[in-house]
Image: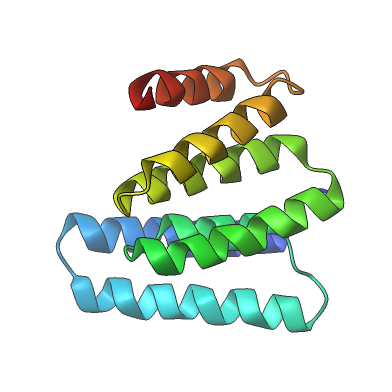
Length: 139
């Protein structure tokens, strides 16, 4: 399932604004933009236009790993439902990284193994390399 252009453009636009706000230390702007993105994701879900890209991006810009994991789990369920293997692998890798942040190396390794299994079904060599590197670092 392709990401609709209007959705992609809006999410990337807000993400760029958040990154720029972070660069200059504008914490309140970051929070405002994060909330704007969360509300946008919720609105699209209500409208039946949900997509894993929304929730993965929201997770990427969420500093609290516990909260981010919830967004990634939602993205993962959608990616699996839609058969988006590359998205599944990417999301599983992010879940692994967040588990490391939370001091859960065993869970991190399990997520990374799942990411590796999914990535092996794709042609994305960069993602496969990134997952392999993560697994090496965690062993």
